[in-house]
Image (tube, rainbow, N blue to C red; front, side, top):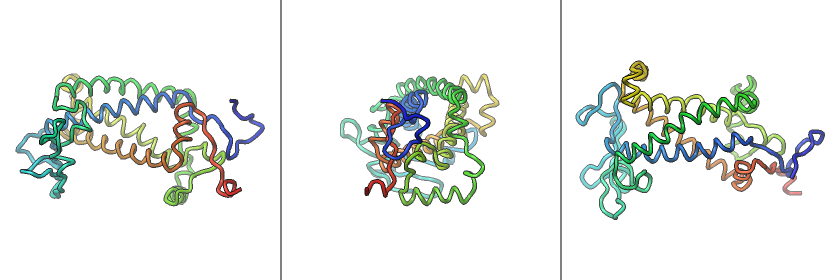
Length: 281
């Protein structure tokens, strides 16, 4: 297998190199790290399934979000709105088939039995990996030109008309074909940029702001986020945003062709999609 010579521009149907090795390694490592952190974080949340704004939060303080069992019903409360969630959130079945009176069900938590201590061990261990891998990936991507060449939007791409054009094409499932499929569109650039420069930094910093050791060493960090409980709320919201990104990302992979997309992210080789008229031919 060899890449096409530069004298012959890539076209639909060609097999070409798409993702750098560093991108592929970080993609899968980051997926594993965030999956473990999400699942262990949900078990930690089960210990006190309420979120607050400010410095303090306890059972009798006003929480802006709560997930709990009320009698024989599971409920999700956001502000003044309460939604029934029996069987999914607040009240579900435990590993032994019995009643599980915790915010999140055991099939989505690490460990699958209630253990705050074990969940913290998993969460903090993988948090260290995230703190190391995120800046390392940024440094490598800056050095190899990935950030500047692939992820940095141009002024023309940031224009409202261009963004709206990409939104309408995605809504109609009209994905780029030929050589255009090798370039990130503006929606991808904005989404990946938000993950790299907003969501992950906030997850890391709010996590540090909640850590007692860091709170003692850097008390200003907790103050920046408006208190420990505010940091916890922001941490939870950033996690939810990352989960939302993951779900949309998976949906796009499935719609664009999962075999081709997975091969590109595993081996680096990608089959350029053919234009519709070429497919009919």
